[in-house]
Image 1 (tube, helix red, strand yellow):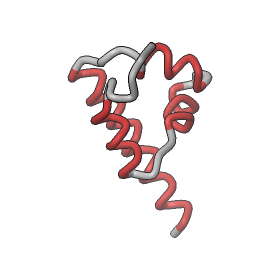
Image 2: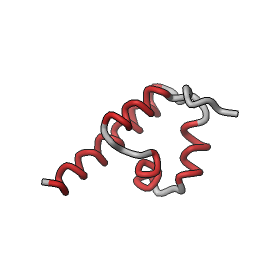
Image 3: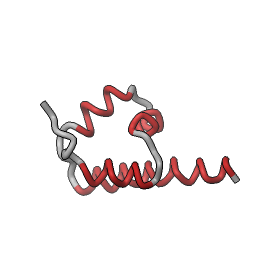
Image 4: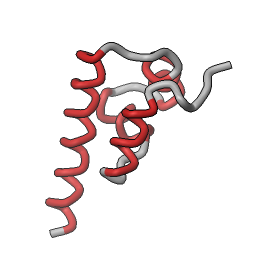
Length: 68
């Protein structure tokens, strides 16, 4: 069973930007369960983490623009 410590830095980054994992999955065009299995259960490489952080930042910026 996967532990929540896997990709803890990504989870913290998403939380800090108030982005849910399901929001990331939607942005990537996949079901939340698929995202969790493919990306969050196994520690990701630095390159994949960089790409996911870019997606998180994009979602957060889009939300800020909508709220303004």
